[in-house]
Length: 98
Image (cartoon, rainbow, N blue to C red; front, side, top):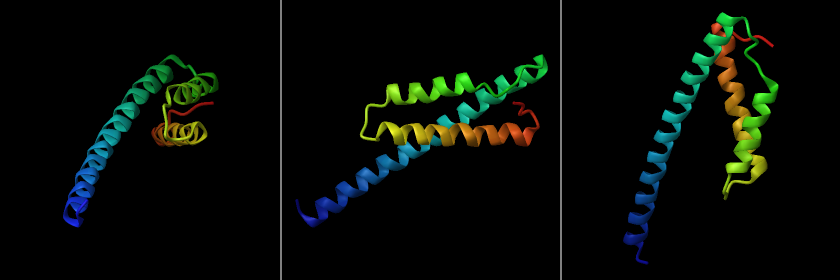
């Protein structure tokens, strides 16, 4: 592969990475909006928002759906971080209850 062709290929791949990043950001924000809707409904009904059983189901499913190359343990860590950061939104809104 020539240097010019290699640089072109790298640029194409970087553009794909940028597109995937945009999709991830869109999906994470959509997930947060849906969780906010659930939290609102639960708050109105007086139901605790945090459900450890549900959270564990989500984490197990993240590993189950993982096809790699990300390690299962790393995928679980990523989803734990997502869950915690979205919970931060609930805390800021004053809706978080254990």
